[in-house]
Amino acid sequence: MRLGIDVRKLGDGGIGEYIRETLTAAARLAPDLEIVAFGAPEQRALLPIDRLEWVPTRAGKYSLAEHFALPTAARGRRIDLYHAPHYVLPLALTVPSVVTVHDLIHMLLPRTRLHPWYARFMTGSACRRARRVIAVSERTKRDLSAHLGVDGAKIRVIPNGVGAGFRRLSADETRRALERLGVRPPYVLFVGNYLPHKNVETLVRAWGRLGEPRPGLVLCGKGFGSARAVWQAAEEVGGRAGIQAIERVAAEDLVALYNGAALLASASLYEGFCFPVVEAFACGTPVLAPDAGAVPEIAGDAALLVPPERVDLLGSEMYRLLVDQELRKGLVERGFRRVQRFSWDEAARRTLSVYEEALGRP
Picture (spheres, rainbow, N blue to C red):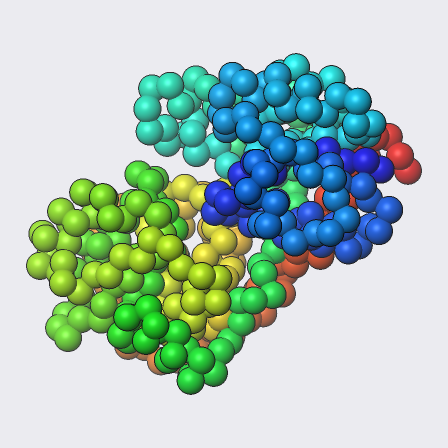
């Protein structure tokens, strides 16, 4: 099979990880798979696969140009199947296709008036035209059916995996990495970008309810340098000096941040999967997470789940998870068991089956 795939979002957080890990595992599991990747020339180093054809593509993400540039680039390359790894499937594309939908955040919690219109049109169009739709959680599948009328028989739920690099580190490894980053334990960790639905200002207010001596709060992700609402919330609770923002971090240092954290905390209003939860499980870090979106489905009984709008409950449960050693131990043990469900090899194996299914192959 010759697979064409849009890899322009390789550097974009969770979707980038999805593309890289799925393709890397698929190439290993299916030696006869021929991959034709469409991405910017400078992105090539982000995809550690030798056996692929790289097609330089400069069309901007979420642009009008991508609907014509990608089909033009695909023409004449004998592609059997095209995979759109997020909800944009080029309108001019004529080859059989599969689309992955991670969530409906742009529709359900839009940042602008344009977002829901664009997302509804593009996601609906992609799901109608694609032969199969991959959803990363049952919640995303339900949302696709409820909000866009996508036939459930067309959707295949394939949960994401967790990278092999996320693991328990020795105390010395963790200490050295934290020293490089200038991070001093104890601290509560948040991992993710600064977008409105992440609800980070509520998390800051909940952290501010902890008594003194209060652990630090480390915010790891893009956008916190200019996150006015977050820093305003920090001023309100008198805790600005206790908050450290890390915008960029190497993969091995992120693992160390998980290992050194007293707990991972999130107050996100909606997630289609939530990578940090399973990454924390793999590192043996207790998790406080929202009972919203796909998080309860992904976390099961291995995290302490709290309504993300409730500052009081977030604060009290954060404190409980910091001081209750039996609770911490139980969550860590259940987290190690839970994370075994999330394998990139299994995700790739099931994705390859969807490819075959989309082409009508037994």
